[in-house]
Amino acid sequence: MRAVQIHGPGAIALAEVPDPTPGPGQVLVRVHACGVCRTDLHELDGEVAIPHPPVIPGHQVVGTVLDCESGALATGVRVGIPWLGWACGVCTFCLAGQENLCERARFTGRDIDGGYAQLTVADERFCFPLPPRYGDLEAAPLLCAGLIGFRALRLAGEGERVGLYGFGASAHLIAQVARAEGRRVFAFTRPDDAPTQAFARSLGAAWAGGSDEAPPEELDAAIIFAAAGELVPTALAAVRPGAAVVCAGIHMSAIPSFPYELLWGERVLRSVANLTREDAREFLAVAERVALRTTVRPYPLEQAAQALEDLRHGRFDGAAVLDLRPARRR
Ligand SMILES: [Zn+2]
Ligand SMILES: [Zn+2]
Image (tube, rainbow, N blue to C red; front, top):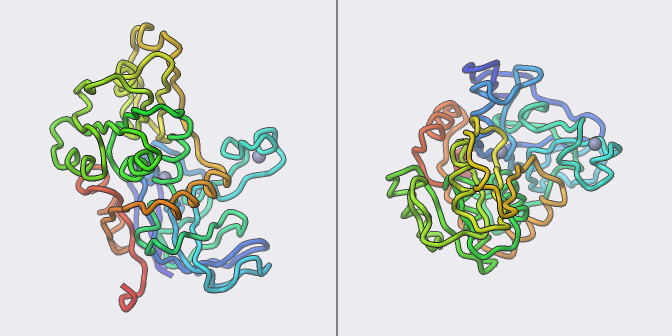
């Protein structure tokens, strides 16, 4: 099959590799689409380490089951494969419902080959049926941008006024979820990025501006999707006492020192790490109920490196998705 592999920092290449074969408890999946995530870019840049390179990246995989040894998933069923590819089930985290923190967790597209490929294999217990209302390309960003963004929104609390710093793949979905929950969204983009601010308003944001601007009112919560540590003091300064600032990315540049007054007043600063299967079930049920408009920029597999560069430079709104469907199905 054809696949894109990351060999090390800066080294990404399309290759012809042997078809994967499913082991016990695994399914073989024909990939239709795979979302491109900032984490993939962090892997390429060496900011997220790949334990055993080369690896096929991609953890927002949409495909159909070709073969399921146990019969738990029927052939032809469409599934999504997210970042959490395996958890031990017996450590203190797993037993406490925090499998996202499992010390032995294995992640799709980092520890396990992912979806930048025509075929992939996955643990059947970590595959999820997808809401039929979404096409293959539209469903892909739900699997990380949506899912981990949703976990971040939950950890941000119930407050009405939610600030989203970095209005990319995650924020464009989570803004809609927040709106459906009756909240108001304040979108922060790169300074002077008027098109992305207009995009945010088109998705229901009450206000959109540059990250160098103060919001028109105090926020009840903030989520930082951008990988820029300097946004942490900025966001803390924008939220009310008792509010949470949630860092939703897997990597962030160093956080500059800031006066304690910004944290004072029981403000909470926390990160979000990975996801649990419960998060996936809960978020996909929301996506079934609420018609989320997913804005996608499709790329063929051969242009995966270009998709990552475009993501790096913010050249599109919404989410980049690799389209692996045969030409006749597009
Ligand atoms: Zn991701
Ligand atoms: Zn565990």
